[in-house]
Image (cartoon, rainbow, N blue to C red):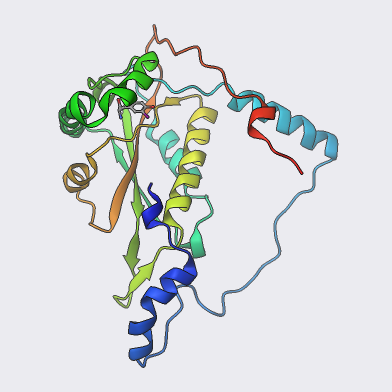
Length: 253
Ligand code: IYR
C-alpha cells in the first residue's frame, strides 16, 4: 500500500475526462441504475447487551496473536470457505468487491511459494531492508527461513484487483481498492480467530509478480497479503508484546 495509488473518485474522473468526452457513447453504470432498495434487516439490541457484547468481543479479539510456527494438523476446507466468505462481506468502493483469495492446499505449490519467498527474503534481510529495519525487527526473531509456508495446512494469498472488466469488455474501475482489500483482510483475520485458528499477516517483499505468475493471476491484480492459516505448533511461543491503551490511540472532542 502506497499513497501513490490512492486516487479520489474526482481525480479518477478527471484523469478519464478527455477520453470520456471524446467518446460520444452512453456510459453504462457498473451497477444497474434501477437497482432496488429493500428494507434493512436490523435487530435493535437492548443497550446493556450492546455494552456486554462490545466488551466481550474486545476481550476476545485482544487474544488474537500473530503466529509464526504452525502445526501441520489439517483443517476442514469448509471452515476456510466460511472464513473467505466472511472476508467477502467487507464493504467496497461502489460495491466492486476488488479482491481475489487464492487458497493453496497443495504441498507442491506451497513448496514453490516458499522457494520464491525465501529467495527474495534472503536478499531483503541481507541487502534491501537495511540496518535500521532489521534492528527494529530483532525482537520478533524473524528471518528469511519461512517454515510456515510449507507447514500450515493452508495459505491464503489476498490479491487486490486494481480494475476488472465488465461483461461488455469495458474496463471496470475499482474505487478505493486499497482500503476495500485492507478492510476485508481485517475481517478475514477476525474470522480466522473466531473459528479458533491462527494466522500470520505476511507481506512478502518483492515477491508479488513471481507469485502472481505462479498462481496464474492477471496483471490487474496485485498481491496484498499472504496468510498461513491453521493451528499453532505445540511449542509455539509469541513475543510478550503489549498493546497501546485506549488513551494512547483515542483522541476525543
Ligand atoms: N517481510 C519480512 C520482514 C518482516 C517485516 C516486518 I515490518 C515484520 O513486522 C515482520 C517481518 C518477513 O516476513 O520476515
